[in-house]
Length: 321
Ligand code: ADP
Ligand code: MG
Image (tube, rainbow, N blue to C red; front, top):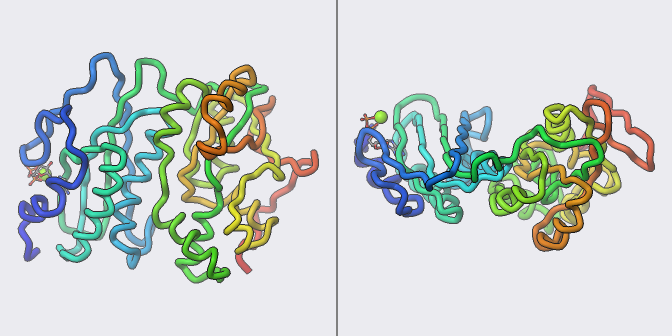
């Protein structure tokens, strides 16, 4: 690499994230020294993005930087944790300064938005691959888990799932949509907004929570499985954006809301007695979440339409035709 590793780190990563007083020693030494708040549990996660697998090699570098942190923020949000510190392991085929500048700007902006400090990492040469590790806090015993939902709990989802999958289809030119919807859907795919503030607030209300990254139906099924119950989702209740409906029509939009990936929304279960307070304290129209169903006896996740269980064929529903 023309640019030395240390000047690359200095230029693009040294001061990219938030400045935090609990970072006793950040980037520059052999390891970072961090001071967790007294009495908190550390909540820790990591996610890897491989070029060509998790993002398109030609994707805007700022969006790749944003995504590398966003996927980890979404995992901590699902745990109800407050994010604090990130590490970045970066494998690059070459040190392209234009790419690095955009990548670090995208990652840094999201880090500052959520008060995350970049405290270290590793930089190596090889096929483009990005791993972020994220560390956050929660009060002891209060982090949210997938397990814990009970029969009768109400199931909610944040945001409007399906948008990101449509945005990806646009990027890959598998879909054409009206101009009015295009920018919105592309942005929903390229720049996901992890629900960090909602996740933290849900510690007081949710009995179980998962982030929706692989499709709402599948991820609701994972929450149900971990809780030893089944999830029942009402097709009519699925929150779909105006833009997604404009692009696909109401019917296909709802199918995509169930199966599409990359949403980075939260799906959570709340005991019925806690629902009135949830709705009062975190007004759904302000916090952006919707009641979609309930937890019932049994296993798996199913969708009801007009009270009847819907059948899905695995041979594939044609979302984009
Ligand atoms: P060492 O060889 O001792 O591991 P490095 O040269 O890999 O040291 O890293 C020097 C410093 O820069 C360390 O503090 C490390 O955490 C940090 N660092 C390296 N790469 C990155 C990166 N991509 N992002 C953030 N910090 C990094
Ligand atoms: Mg190193």
